[in-house]
Amino acid sequence: MEIKSKILKGDKYIWGAFFGLCLISILSMYSASGTLTYTSDDIYDPIIRHAKFLVGSVIVVFVVHYIHYKYLRLFGFPLFIISSLLLIWALFFGEKLNDASRWIIIPHTGIRIQPSELAKLGVIILSSYFLAKGQNEKGVSTNAFKKVLIIVGTSCLLIFTENFSTAALIGLVSYCMMIIAGVSFKKLGILLLLVMIFVGSILGTAYILDKKYPDSKGGFMKVMHRANEWNSRIASFFEKSDGKKSFEEDTNDDNYQEHHASMAIANSNGIGLGPGNSQERDFLPQAYSDFIYAIIIEEYGILGGLIVMGLYISILFRAYQNTRRCTQAFPAFLMMGIAMLIVFQAIINMMVATGVMPVTGQPLPMISRGGTSVMITGIYFGILLSISRYATIENNSNNSKDEEEIPESISAPNPNLKDDI
Image (cartoon, rainbow, N blue to C red; front, side, top):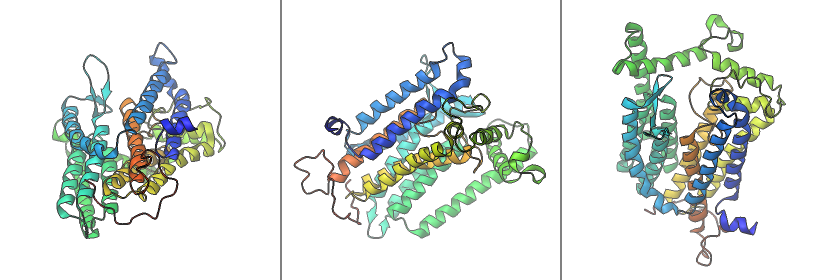
């Protein structure tokens, strides 16, 4: 234990949640990646590839959690600029999958990068910086509020045409950060109204134009066609044909994923079929990614699903506890932003897999297959641990004796967070 405490710094519960998710990821991917073995000469190739990314993520967490959180703000603006340029490149020259251009392939390497993952990190760091910098007696200055809107709005506009759910996730997390930071409810209310009008206008225009010009798929019409797909998914989720419930409908191309995800959950009978005994992994598209939670429930039952859910919720809970021990605004906002990003994405994935919301393409953080996602999530955990390691000891009067040790008992938290920028 003493060796661990000297090497692995920061909140031990966050470390536990991270390694727990890694273990679940290996077990789940070994079973859920069955369809990938058909395209590989080696049946173990998919799980070995995923394990390599998990090992890389562990290394990333270890390195990042040794970086003082004050230096993290230096990466915000470069990440925002680089991700914005990559998003623009992906729109025109990116690799297409399911009619969406979300990936960039590095020439001569075969490595794929998803720029939206970099955008998430850049937006959260910059938003935390400006919200901390703009703290005043009334909450957040108007100038800081405008800067956050520009940062968030730019990234969301570049992302939403190809990945509406990711843009919505970034917007939701940023909005919650503004609430936490103290932006006035008047500004937040106006912002929410404007966003609803904008999204409604896009969806309405998409529906009209797609009906009028169904064969036009290029340029502006491509954007409208993608937007109309969102309309279709929402409509099919809420309005079942002939008044039937979803499980009463015949399986077709439109509901294939939802039906097989429901079949996987039903197969569990509440207690699960046992590791490696999934019956739907060869039929459920993206069983190793967007719908891996359905496979987890199928094999490990309701208890397994609750354990996974509990790990994510514990991350948010521990982040909140650590922010109450912070004496500066920047690390507190950054920690809550990162924690909400991880947990909200996990909740969206689980809601889709269990049929609670329309299908969208959000992977389960640290568990689903994906190189960029796994590595970036490793950075998220590294940041959480860095803040829990450094920011929470700054209100300890004895931190000069041992700046690396997080004190076991902390005095009452200071409700007036100050800017440390």
